[in-house]
Amino acid sequence: MTMLTVYLVLLLAIPSGVEIIALGSLGRPSLIWGIVLLGWWAVARLQMRISDARSVFQPVRFAFVAFLVLVLVSYAVAMLRGQPDDQISPAFTALIRVLSWAGVLFVAVDGIRTITDLASMVRRIGIGAGLLAVLGLVQFLTGHGIVDFFGTIPGLSMAGGIQERAGVIRSSGTAIHPLEYATAITAALPLVIAAAISHGFRSNRAHGGLWFWLVGLISASALVAVSRSAIIGFAVAVISMISAVPARFRAFVIGTGTVVTVVIFAATPGLLSATIRLFSGAASDPSTQSRTRGLERIPEFMSTSPVIGSGFGLFLPRYYVFDNQWVLLAIELGVLGLLSFLAFFVAGIWSARQSRRSSDSDVRLLGHALAASLVTVAVLFAFFDGLSFPIAGGMLFLLAGLCGSVHTVVAANVVSDAPPPGRPQGDIL
Image (cartoon, rainbow, N blue to C red; front, side):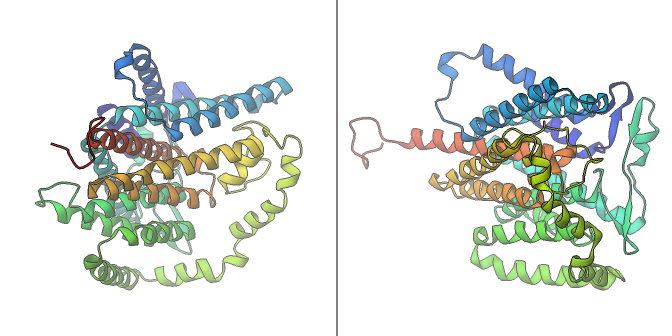
């Protein structure tokens, strides 16, 4: 819990554009901590006693290992083919990023073994996303980056900053780009909604209202992001959680959401018209046209190596900017890589949905929320190359790891609740 919380703080609190100058692109604090987690996990596994081992099959880990193997194979093949000097370093950096994500995923899958720890980790992600949303709203209202001081610290460099669209400030929080920011807050939104419904997954309801405030803050921040992707991600997150919201809360949630939306648009001149133009003028928007033209060029870029791709991290922006992680993976890792990444999402969602086997309503709600978060990320990755951005990639693998831990927790509880061998099902003392 402590190690993953440190990672979460480094991921969300320190701007993703901050690097330790001496380490270059490998100097991002969250990336370094992910490597520490991988080493720590490996040592723990080597020291594990047979009696401590869990027999629960983890499809999330299996799918990720398949993805990792394809990344390693594509890297090796790409290096054997020979690469321009300026592509070797990005390919190596991309490989280290995957290993860092592996550390996060493995520690989450194997380290979170109780519903108490799982709920605590979900609460921390929700609070982190809520604070990130507050920062985004402050940036929107003041027009200042707030976190720019990181770039003045000796030994650090910082990329990114405040952007505008149609004369309206686009918040980015601690992210490099508004889309990365939108992914972080909307991916966490289902978790915050679940926490609000269950009063923070606690029997004590003293601070239950805090989570409704966080839902409102994240929703407001997504609406003022001036981004089609942010609004689409927000819609996916909310719609995927509707079935989990008790009927007695639905009218309240819909009414409150409507009031908040009206107040935001009324209090911000130009925001409503800018948001409407995002969708009404999508066909003529340069970014939409670039994405459309890019789809036509997929066969051209995949023709050299359609099975295992050109190499993870080797398709640089100078060739083409797809703004679609799924397409980019098809080019860099081929058909096999794309299928393995899709299987990774499916495995995570399936693992989280195993919570339906639990008799605990909070466990079922947690699993549903984590599955909804992964669905939200999967949709948003169709609008930008999410794995190229530290916060978006880090959130994905942390959430997927927690999905795997849901499967572990539920399986352990089902076994512990089963009757002893030879005793009738109903005869449990």
